[in-house]
Image (cartoon, rainbow over all chains, first blue to last red):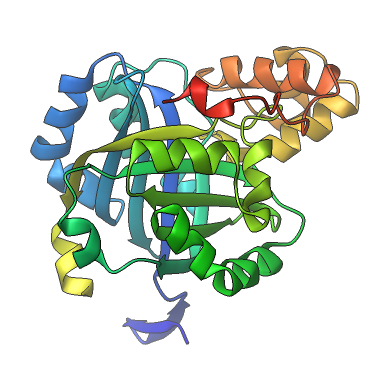
Length: 226
Length: 71
């Protein structure tokens, strides 16, 4: 049910605010500029309903980043995309050619492993991220649930699945894996339910991203929303 | 995925335009609007044109020791 706004006797119905995630993989020539933008331009990013920003840095190429931005907004997503804040984000990092941008909604956030188990490990976890087409998104989510024990054995800590707004068969999958060794094994020999990982980087899709969390920033609305 | 932020054009829309004969960024812009304003998505559009023309839009990369590429 949308919110009602009464102005001079007229009643206008607005859609309820929607929560979406924007994500992109790209090379950021100016990482310091990116960090500065994250910390100094909170109000700027807040104008498009930004709730949090997470930047992952690739293991082999630190300037290659995978960025996810959680937003909560009540305007068409195309309006958000063409907003100055989106362009400022790329400008701050020295990015001239804009990468394709994934826009989706959360389908699944699965905690595979008790975080306390991993907290005792000396190893920093690794994030494997992919934006890929899959034949059946619902089947993918169902299989993840069915094979969660297999993921646990492989060292997978968490799995996030997002469905693209512009394509019913395109997903972004983020997997947090406990060690580099386990991540390497998982990429080379994924579970059958994760066979789509072999399609990462196909055609015009971005390559598989393997990295670690570099920065995370929550904005005021994130706490308000709980 | 969205290619063109200015006009909200998706990779799929660009790929379809290329499949229908748009073989340059100029023709893609005429067909979809993508790349016709700030032009900062033209590199991505060129990648899509190349991928579609090569018939590899959805072909996976070689599977051997893939992890070596990232770790």
